[in-house]
Each structure stands twice: as C-alpha cells, then as structure tokens.
Figure 1: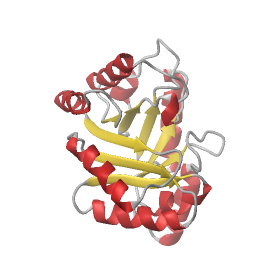
Figure 2 (figure 1 turned 90 degrees about the vertical axis):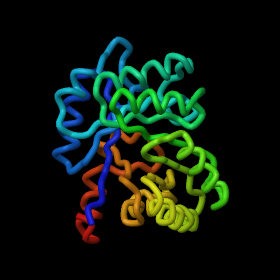
Figure 3 (figure 1 turned 120 degrees about the horizontal axis):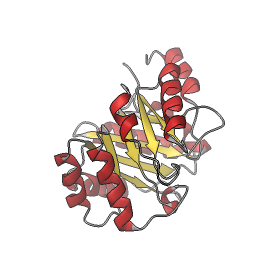
Figure 4 (figure 1 turned 135 degrees about the vertical axis):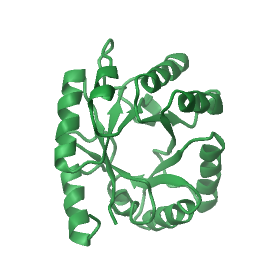
Length: 227
C-alpha cells in the first residue's frame, strides 16, 4: 500500500510557501497543508493554488486548536470561502464553526473538497466519544472526517487505530494521536485505513505536538513496505 503524507506549511509569505511546497514534494509528500494562521496579513495564496501541481489543503487554526493567532468567527469563515474560490483542493473546517453544514455546503459548491476536523489537546476520548465526534463530522456533509487527539499513554494508539480501521470502512477519515505517545498512530493510521497522515517539512518546523518530518516518515514507510 502507499501511505499518503500531507506536509504542514507554516509559511509567512507566498514566496516562502511556494519554496516550501516544492521542497515537500521533493521530500516525498503527497499533499501540502497551507496553514493560513501563519501567513502574513495581506498575502494571498490564490496564485499558489493555481500554479502548484500538488494537492493543497487550506487550514486556519485558532489558538485553542493549535493555531498561531486568533481570528473572529466571521473572518475565519470568510478566509475559508476565499480559499475555495481560489481553487484549493481541500478546505479544512473546524467542528466548532458556526453554521457548520452551511459552510461545508458552500465550499462544496465552489468546487473544493472538505475536511471537518476536531482536535482534543487534553486527552484521547473513549471509543463511544470518538464515535459521537465522527457522527458530528459526517453529519456536516464533509468529505473527510478528521479527529486528532492527545495520546497520554501508548495504549491510546490502540484505541485510535482500531477506531480508524472501523470508521474508514464507511467513509474517508483521518485519525491519530498528538504528542510523543501518539507517534505510533501518527505513522500507522494510513495502514489502518486513514486517507492520509500529517508531517512537518523538517525537524525545525513542526506545527503540532509530536509531528515528525516528512523525510523521517517516508523512510519508516519504506522500511515497513508502505511505499
């Protein structure tokens, strides 16, 4: 099987973004996640979306979901709508977004696929709670449900991988644990049916706890036969 990797791009400018996306592709990435909360105000990624051949994900994280800056709800939605208009392949919408289903439908009408994401920076929920979060994500009409938790012990990986295997039989899903205890699920989630997993461009630019570099993850996949 081919384990797919999306690389998070914390670029400040469009010029930096273009350079980082091309490096990510060179290092073995399949997709690039543009972290709009890192982008300087006034910068536009429309030209990048039209020029790059790699599938691009537009993501704007608030501070409480690991982002670099806060944004008002209306501005947050506006930013996501603009990225869909500019031609991004995927747009990531947080579960707490007001009028979530309406926003997801509007992005679909503009031609972008949607990822509805839920992050837990405290713990890994129970299996029943994970099922409830999945239902919320899928009820929005999202193409991919993304559930990312914080692993507090190695056993949390077993719960997440079992959940991923079950959930992936009925729709596209991304699921793994953050932090050093979540490394196992971060790496193995595509093996258990996840659409793809996430990595950093290099060791110096992680944007989430426990994120590994794309080159390191690709080496691991090569060693275990997931190429």
